[in-house]
Length: 114
Length: 113
Image 1 (tube, rainbow over the protein chains, first blue to last red):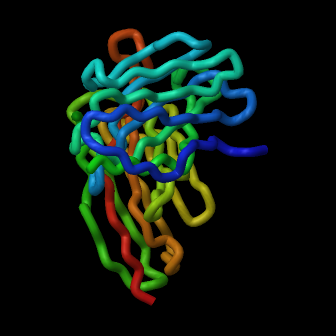
Image 2 (cartoon, rainbow over the protein chains, first blue to last red; image 1 turned 180 degrees about the horizontal axis):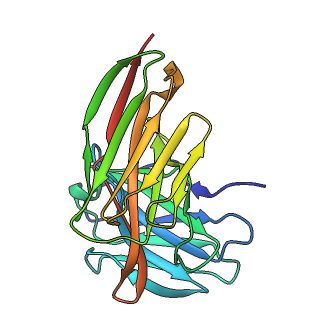
Image 3 (cartoon, helix red, strand yellow; image 1 turned 30 degrees about the vertical axis):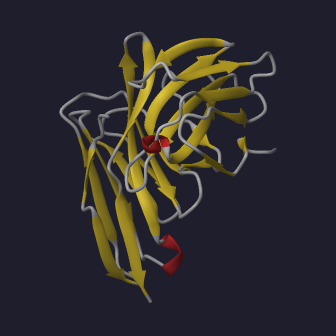
């Protein structure tokens, strides 16, 4: 079975632009979470979606938004990009809404904002 | 953002040596996950722990869920060069109605052949 897939792998944007990142979870997994990982740090929680509904949100500004589709894939959108948004964006899927279930990560999308 | 404390931050060890690292918090967690991340890749799940005091192995890796539920430990026996990478712990608990994972600061492991 395929693992979590993310696209694109790399992306370069300029300040003020917006970006859309995509994630497909492991087959059968209904929960998707998004994380931001800045160089040298651990992943920081952004969103969790389960059955197309937002179930949790981390301490990120409203410029960050996400949605989940009927096939459980997900998109993360970031508007008005800032230099500080440069990071590895990770998607993780789990078989349940996250309660005591392990999360499996995709390879990530490396976003560079110039 | 909040991160859990991991120690050591980094370590150089000789091939064949055993490695120990830990993750501590002031908060109680219900789940502990341990991941390994290599450059340019996403974290790979190594071990999942669900109960205080639980000891779980995966090959040469052994992890324990601390009895206080505020810490966890990872041991690697007989290290080999491919163990190089960054090891992250993640504590899981319900916050504001959502089960969330908080990650540690990472332990960077370098193995000298």
